[in-house]
Length: 237
Image 1 (cartoon, rainbow, N blue to C red):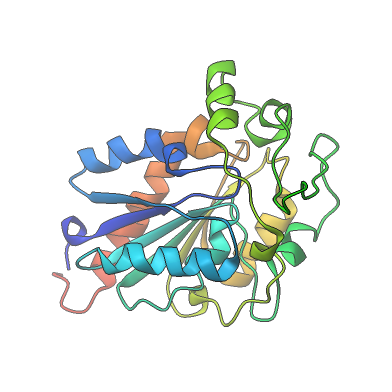
Image 2: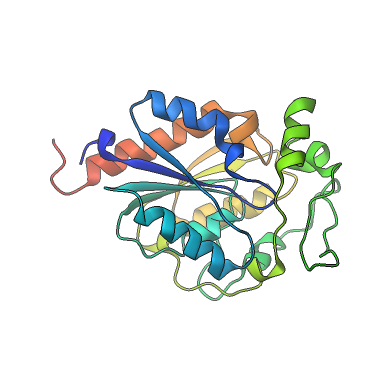
């Protein structure tokens, strides 16, 4: 396997869609990589894992799987043998028997984090003001407006299900810790990264570095791609 053989599959988190990866896709493609943004319905954890698996079925060859925020749990739930490495971007990584909510609430919320509750349809939306206050405080006003406009709500059924043995226990992993994150506490990110024995990059970025610091996200993905290629059986010395 060479780095050029890999496909990078990008998985969005809650209150987002595939367009959140727009600033990452182009630079990765410019490096000669195939890139796919996997759409999640955010209707239940089981639905989201099934949606990711359908995307992986369409991809030929080895995959480096990248998850932002909630999607960290989803990328660790696939059992696809195509996955050679996992990259966590300010993401959640519950261990076996834990739920997403368990790790999300491990530390006290940031003072500017929004208060969340399901609406009349049982879906959780991010309040409009939260995009500037906590989700992507380093983004421009235009970027914040776009994030708010395309947001997708998440069901409580996504975050209250205990996960099985996560794939990060069996694959190499990378973790970008966002030190200015107001949605997922940085200390929680450091705890999860250490537990995973991930290769860590810690940066002074907000919860959405794929929007506000895309170069850093591209760099850690490329590191994972190249290392996975060099570690693969039959890789050239």
